[in-house]
Length: 208
Length: 213
Image (cartoon, rainbow over all chains, first blue to last red; front, side):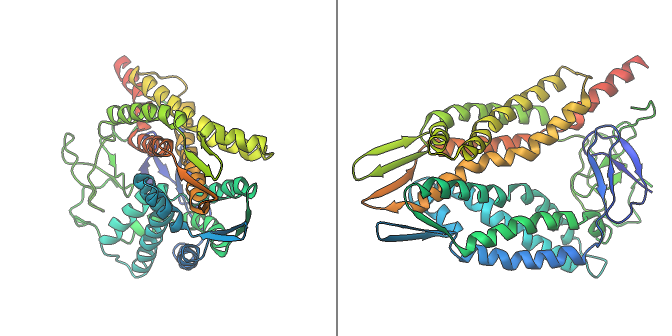
């Protein structure tokens, strides 16, 4: 049994040991309190490695190509942000680059370091810092939204020219599946349990 | 809700926002740092209501130019054309892909507006100390957090349209000033959701019960 305060409504409650794949919900506000994935660290590590490779492919291969009246053009993900920058919308270009390249890459890099460092407990305190960064950057990773945006753009342009999806597009599609799979397979509590305490466990005034 | 329901704050326990560890701070006024991960402890997110209001108002102001100013300018050898978010959706509808037109309309017009209304509603009910439909308000807050990111859709549509259609002098597309304001609406509302503290929804009931006892 462990005592937690619900992050949604602050209700104090005890969580019974969860079976693998189990989930606990707050009885008052209905928010998720804890979930226990089936395999603790190996599965998210495998998924993160796969996602890191796919991310490189997605960012180096063209997203889509266009041909009209004998002319060819193609763009990568960063190429899109770069064109925005060139056209004088620097702020928008930076936000786009952050949401579709920097945030997913940063999240994967943090996860990779966390999962590798937590394999041999006790994990050093910087693992905790990386967990906080991974948590902060995750809501800004918007590859699935970009994917839909690219599809809408393709349909719009298809009226004017012949468009063909590129390798980068398929790789992005794969990433859109892999990123939530990592989040589902990963239980941060599993890592926090292994992290060395910042102020020493003995001197702590922790509850229980 | 049972009578025994006790919040962390009443019990003198504060959960770490970073690692969820529950600890008993030495002094209530200055909870200090989490003994496990070292993050600063706080009873509630600091100045949640003021910060969220500021972000909601800023987003509401940006919402107007985002919808009025053009997001795309199309230049061909013969003509030049400007599209706002709304006329982009209408173009999709008239060109025969109405499912995409509906998606764009929901993501770009309805979600940002709904988010602003929902956040204002949550802020006003918390400030008035409302104790009714707490569960629904908690659910609304979670929903706003989940769907908010999808309004970035139009920014990505514009980015990739601009990147591909650079066939000077035949045809070229450039981003209009509306896209910057639209992007600002999305970013500001995401920040507003993060600065709000859903626990405030439940604090009013606790205060009222405490007053009665």
